[in-house]
Image (cartoon, rainbow, N blue to C red):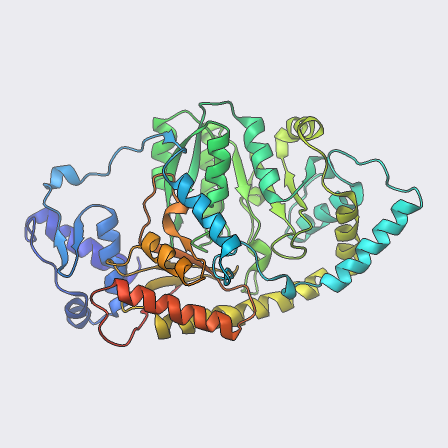
Length: 481
């Protein structure tokens, strides 16, 4: 058990025993830090965990207090299925508009900067593909994708210790196309889908378009998906399918350890519930040992593993895939009737690069670049953001999920930043219920320029202005995982 969890359990015990009574004020973060001999960030993590569970409440300018509800009322609320069509739709639209309108949108971008990728080498592969098509080869698109690319993807799986038959792999126009196609094939309007909380806003949009209901399963920045809550939800609701990201999750960056991934698929197998695995960031791990998808532990072919080259090799080529397990015939049939196939030249170009371009060598360089950029953004947050800002440092990817102090509202910060020409991703767009107003997602996958440094300084100043406790030099209390 982590230190913040120990402190949270101790305080919870004092509340349940009546030592800490309703409306009593808890020690300030500074006092608790000195008393327990721990960092302020650890105290913040404990208080935030208690607040999320409804045991304590934060009052502006006053601190943290025991919730006035009686202990009997503090039991976890039942897990409800509800529509994904919420007030967050309009906020997501404003966010997407800010990406277009703001002069500095790098911090909010869902993609890394194209300059990080081997665009010149890919262009040569693309020219080669175009020449082969001019000669009359490969002129008829294959709905499920070009065999040469599917073969290369199967070989990538083999390097991860997985044998995935080429017939299970269907090429799509990016990962979101693969994810949405899988969801549409496995569900009907009114079905219930289990998703993470927070989750990628594209998942919420897809679920809303398909008129589905959602059950949100908490995703902790330290521990990942809460399997106990998922087990309760599976027992309570007729969940048709799950859509989870278990490696470098967007937006938190958390990765489930292998034992929890195995426990996840065993839980789903017991209920015969398929998993749509959104796995577009796993190639961007920083550690020496690659992350493994849940599909590696799947013995029942329940996992539809969705990937993409947009985040790790070829942005804007829009090439993704789904390794669909037992559902491959259904997905292939839907692919052949639902939309045009993915770009044939782009498929051929990526297949050529995977075979001859030194993909693994490029990935090693990309990971080093992203590690450096992550360090730059962590330093900027530490220098510019208000005291009480916290985050968990992810082991890869290019996103930081930043928790702001209690009095800073991420939607207000989003609006203020947009007025200064800076786009950020506010927390509520990652939730079907529109909460998470103390969080923002920041993208560090862009070359660190003076413009980005200035944007971070401005953003930190705006956050400090929103926080009445920030009268001194800003400081971020970081938590490293």
